[in-house]
Image (cartoon, rainbow, N blue to C red; front, side, top):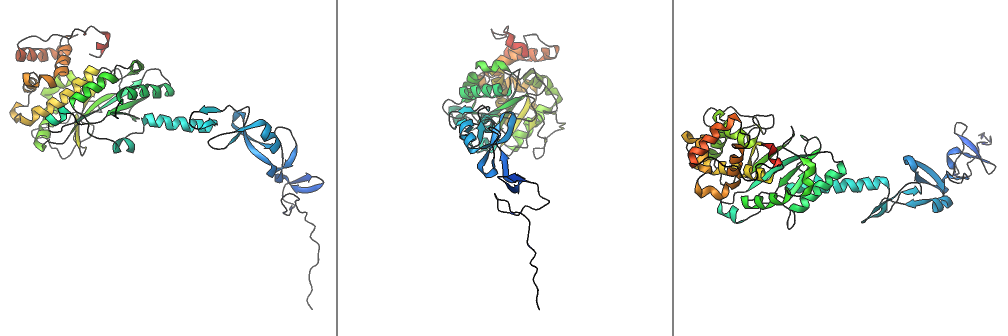
Length: 403
């Protein structure tokens, strides 16, 4: 004969969720019945105890989430128009032109996205995808050669938000008709960013930097007077032979060229632009990217010698130096890889248009607070031109303090 256990189950059911309230579970009384403690909640505003399902999590001041009954939510909370989060009236909303009134987290997200649109990540994909040579009469006359500049800058005393505003002002001045300039973060900088141009001709750089570095916002930036900022000039490999690049490497790294390199670069053999020990023909297959001439990029070679600057004239002198180096190395013999030979190329009348800022820079360098190391450079220029260099009329300007 089969028997059945008919013992009555005395475990109470929760009147809110319908589940059994086990002895080991936290329980309480609600409307005269035993319920799970988790199934009821006291409203943070009015204090009424109601089923938890009839409350909502709401963000309160101090970043604390509290529960309000539905009546109190209607009376005491507002909703973020972006993420739908409910917040008490003690939590300030942020007005956004695109999204309406948003909560603090969404406001920070929107601001982060805005900053990223202005100052992108290092070598970000968007910038790389939009990099295009800007053709001009100059590039067509020079075998479609193009040069790109990377200028590193640090902020003086501005906040992060002000730094973004400064970058925005510079980019607005540059990108009036098309995108010619980007700003990116760079891990080698303390509190700044890097300005990166599209590849273009000398004519494009003259027009671009004359606009950008005359924006009043640049007064909040510094470059030359830092230990971190450099100025790098890329030149496209289009039309460059391995022999030509080899001569450029050999000349820049020759100890006898130090006087010239120091004059234009304002630094020498630092960790970011190391001098390479070259005997005769320079190897163009291998290299360290942090050398005076970086030959590791696929589509360009990069002169990294230059110190940063906030002067348009100095940027242009560095670009013209790079272009002159390319032109001169194409025809110079190995025996003629000398400072004198290079300077003769710079001061030839047929090259005057492409070396104007460079010649002005040399004149300024060897006449304004002349360093003993540049006396020989001044004498070489005097012998080549037949006249002593004369500093530009604005050399007394305090901005020439970078000399």
